[in-house]
Image 1 (spheres, rainbow, N blue to C red):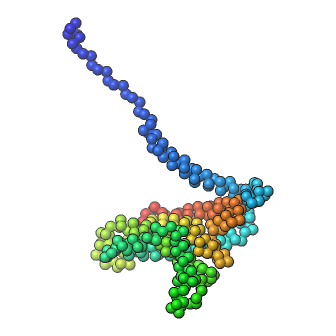
Image 2 (tube, rainbow, N blue to C red):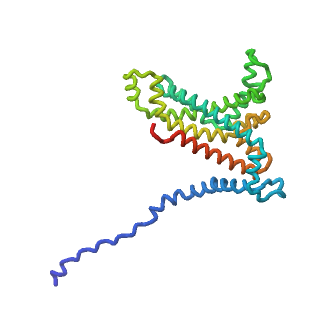
Image 3 (tube, rainbow, N blue to C red):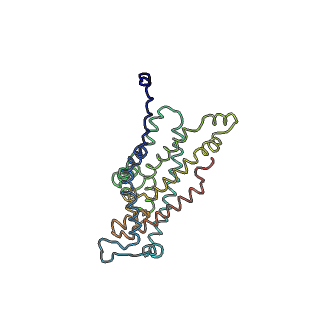
Length: 310
């Protein structure tokens, strides 16, 4: 008996506890508040725009409010010449701005990618306009284009042009003036993205090309550009969407004038909703603009073969 008592029974293995579901759900619980905020601030306004595009909604004329069906869209394509005028100008604005910003941004990126004294300061000066807000950029250029204290005043002092000339009020000079103003802020965007991609190009490729006798131009065409393909495609697409939706600069500088010469489609939408209080028709215009951007973006990515072989 004593011997049997001395032989201890082996301890029972501990019971396995069920894996708690909380750790697996924790990431979703953490991102839940942010997801709800995004639904509230993004999804709801988008759905509201689609809803009001089918309505006649003007707070100043409540007796006319009600379901309109597709009447707003029919009016856009058949009875609104301003829509076509602003759409054509928007296409012109995007093409000119994005094209020039890409060229100057690529040139600046290639320059600041070189090794020279004061390169850090040079990069900071190149990128600094991108850190300035759109409203502040507009205020700066309003002062620069002021007919009494701006650029034209100093040019007149040097005998170039006349006093009191306003480039923003002349239909022949307003477009180049606003293009230059937006270039100042938009070029650094391309320079930043392209420079970041240039840092990943292997120097061995350039050294091998030099050994083979390739010129700088051939190195740029056969090495640099193919490597920058995806960065250029993505940056031009993003900037095209932003330029198409550009309202703050044009609204502050010209208000869409003179004589509607600088009215883009988004600016026309803003004037229709904010000034005319015609939110139903403005929502329909917004829906059409969204579909145009979506279609053009899909076609551009398809034709450019984004993400394909370089």
